[in-house]
Structures are given as structure tokens and as C-alpha cells.
Image (cartoon, rainbow, N blue to C red; front, side, top):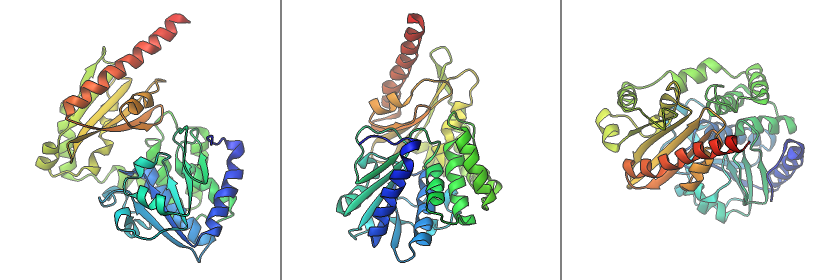
Length: 342
């Protein structure tokens, strides 16, 4: 099964719509440690299905046992999210949103395996996706873009609540339209969503301007630790469980700290590492150039996009740095080698 292009998208919309039409019970699940695109897209998809097929039983699942991140609870339907570990039904259809790797479903993977049929709507590169229908567009800035286009394909009215979820999805996955994936399509769809009632200032207020004081104290620690490597081209920092406990911040609040590290002048690649329970470390990678940092994430068991990727490994912060920094340095060496050869 190959990833889809824009020209194939309508055929895949038709295939997914057929699976939805044939199902009575539908479970929608995004990846572990969900971000704004994952949550906004799955919540909007639920609203879309309920409008187009009002007799369907649709539930949105959280892959982990953690609650919905606080900054995303303003979106319609967030209060109805169900933990996958507590969902005991065998759905007719399972829809994976914003991921194509089954293991990243965490507790949702068991639900997926019990489902009669499976569909994928994603924008992460994947060589071997699972499922009966897989719409995977790595060129899409966010899954929110694809869901908005799915609504248009079905002639579904995009309500202000749906538009708000999708705008949040696109805004967060493009880094407030600052990342390299902020293309013409992303701006066009975002503009359409505003016309349908999305409120960009409300999204910004909830996601980027409502930080708790505890988080800001953690942020100051992370900023004070920023270090550069490889002649300033790589910037990195970290947060430990002790830091999070001492400041009173929460794990989900720290996800955006990679952008603080990314803001260092002269750095081309940023790495932020945080300890998580269970003796593990989660790493977030961002690139400001054309280097494909997803190679590093995949080498460490993770994945993502060329300019935005992540991974989770067992061990300490030092272990993760020792594993990731040489791989990042090698990326620059490879790039220099290609330029020298040309």
C-alpha cells in the first residue's frame, strides 16, 4: 500500500466514506502523547461523521491513560474523550488519525486489533501502513487540512465548532504558521476555516497565552540550560522529573519547550529532552533548515516529519543526549559531503 497524493485523495475519501457508511460503531484514536493536530482532527472528524451519518455511534479515544492536555480542553468534544484502556467494545470501524504506526496507538492498538475494519488518515511518511484504507499525505501541513477537505468532499457543513478544532490542528502543527510546512494550502484552508467561524485569537489564547506560573518556572530552568553543539548549529536543553515535580508543572505542558530551544540564533536544529515516568526519556526535534531530522528520530525508535520529529527511549537524559547528538552531527556531515561532491 503506497502513500496517497493529492490526485488520489478523492478515491481514498470515497473508500473511507464507504467504510464509515457500513459501520454502526466507530472508534477514532490518535497517537500517544497527542498534540493539537491529533486532538483537533479527531474531534472534528467525530463531529463530521455525526453530522453526515447521525445514527452512527462514534467515540474519540485517548491512546494513553493521561487526561486530555489542559491547553486543548477548549475544543468541542474534549470532555467526551474516552481512555482506550477503558473502551471494551469491538468497533465496526477503527480510524487512526495522525499516525500510521500501530505501536504509537499505545492502548488504542488493542482496540484497533478488535475492530472489523480499519482506516488511516495521516500525513506522516509510512512505508507499510496497516488498515483497509489508508489516506496518507506527507505533503499536507496537518491532518486538519485533510479532514477539512474530507468535509468539503462530503458536502458537510463545517460548523464553527468543527472549524475551531481544525484551525487549532493546523495552527499547532505549523507552529503558528512559522514552520517550513506552512504552505499555500495550509493558509488557504485556514482562511476558509476562519470564514466558517474559527476564532484564531481564542486558539492562541488557550494554546499559547494561558501558561500556568508553574510552567513558566519550568521554562526558565530549561532556558537557563540551553547549550549549543557543533559550532552552534545544534541547540539542546532538557527537563527532569525532579524539575517538573519541584515547579509543579505537568508533563503535557512541557511539549512546547522545544520551540524555546529552537529560537536560539544561529542554531539550525533543536533538541529538547524530558524525563517521563517509567525510566524513559522523550525527545522533540525541530529543524530550521533542509536537514531531514526524522532520520534521527527513526534511528531512535520514533518518527515524524523532516522538520519536526520525536522519539522515546529508555534511560536517562544523558543517555538520550549521548545517543541523539552524534546522530545529529552526522546529519550535518552527510549534508556537507553532498555539497562537496556537487
